[in-house]
Length: 217
Figure 1 (spheres, helix red, strand yellow):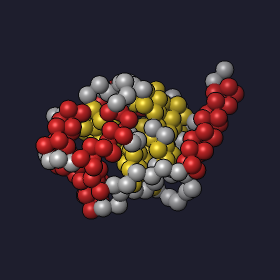
Figure 2: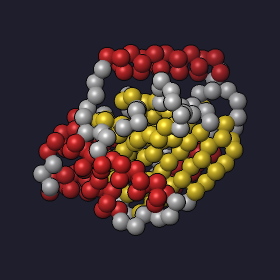
Figure 3: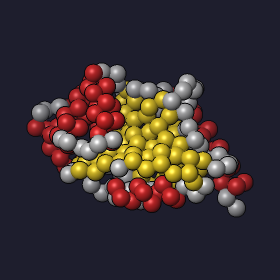
């Protein structure tokens, strides 16, 4: 299903996400009317969604009680900063959202600028863990359970993005492919940890607090 709407209240986007069992509060972090495009598909034990907007958006309360919500971005133009997912700075080859495995439902967050679209791939937690254990993917399991995200630029990630983009416009033909490709990404990806990223997160939350104090009275 593909949906394109003009909006001034981001709650319209939140209402659509409820179809994927996501009870998410979305805040537009810039003044003025924005527009967005959202595509989503749901199948057995998984779902995919992609969102792009002309304004920077904050997602609060992301996460379900059944899925790990993997996130990546697709840059639309060059910028110094695309956003964060669960505190992990998102780049063109990043996958994040691992904290949705361990966090309580609806406790995750993300923030993405208008310079990119954000894609979520929601995989059943129990099925994913069982698949990782069955193929003895210990490195992948360690990254999933101990980190917030990875950077990967391998063939599996390219295939995953192409598959998602194609089936967002049609339908999900084989959910197993998403599990196989995500496991391959987890196995080969690298965790990035820098003081610079931590500093950016702190600056972001300080700016968000000021925004709410000024505009949300």
